[in-house]
Amino acid sequence: MNRIFQATFSALLLCLPGLAAVAAPIPIMILDGESGGPYHNWKLTTPVLKRELEETGLFKVTVVTAPRSDGDFSNFKPEFSRYKAIVMNYDAPDWPANLRAQFEDYVRKGGGLIIVHAADNAFPNWPAYNLMIGIGGWRHRTEQAGPYWYWKDGKLVSDPSPGPTGSHGARLPFQIVTRDAAHPIMRGLPPVWVHVNDELYATLRGPGKNMTVLATAHSDPKNKGTGHDEPIIMVLRYGKGRIFHTTLGHDVFALSCVGFITIFQRGTEWAATGKVTQKAPANFPTADSVSYRVDIAEMDPAFLKGASPVVAAK
Ligand code: ZN
Image (cartoon, rainbow, N blue to C red; front, side, top):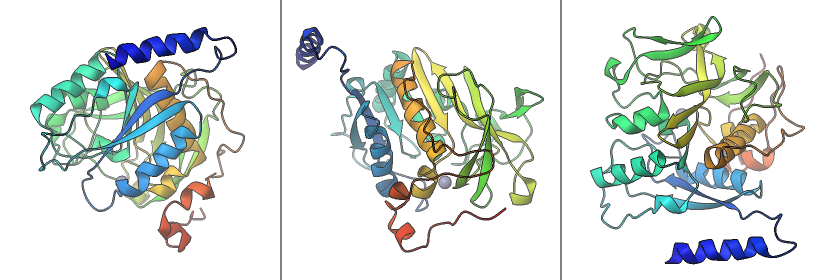
């Protein structure tokens, strides 16, 4: 009933002269409420993600906080279908079966999904979620999760080698290399740019189905890396649903990178609508210099105290 009313109301708005060009904001859910440890402070990062989406003027963001996975889900009714896309700022080991089924149904029927950083640590034993994210790490994932995926000789390859699932070195700046410049999320961005201090995820495993890698970063053996060009930005399909997945975004400082902000804003629009209308900002990072927003970095009290990672000189 309510949905019918909203649809009718929207249709009426579109008929009014002078208002036709003003599109209604795209409803987006940010889902948070749990992380795998104290190192992912979702209470600090959710307001950052919300602000970055809303400042585009394109989105209306609702934050939905889930109970802890060992808590009571009987009153948790997230109404996924009211949103064009869901941003997962969330990492939990498991969900009740009926909630998993609702989520799968939502994405399969065309709901958008955005996976930020440790959201690809979540749900190691949920096959559909692992198809949606393509690759993931930690939470006791093994070779059973699937092969490693990385970029080699100009293409994405899978590697069934044994070894750890999920790793990263110290948080240093690193270069991001575009691998699909024609994709709407990447269009007009520099082919190479430097991201601020962040975790460079490596040794992720997964089914890797319907996955297109848009950008990679070289995992440096001198910083506990693999020597591979690791997937950093990717898009996937699950049923009719579009998924945008980036392994970037460990903390508020990482989220303050103009490169991260741009691909997050664009990736969310693409997951929600299939299109990207946003232009690249003039202060986008370059191949040899970072660019970050102090107004965002300051949303972490530690940054104000000078305790945040300082961009290391190379
Ligand atoms: Zn992290």
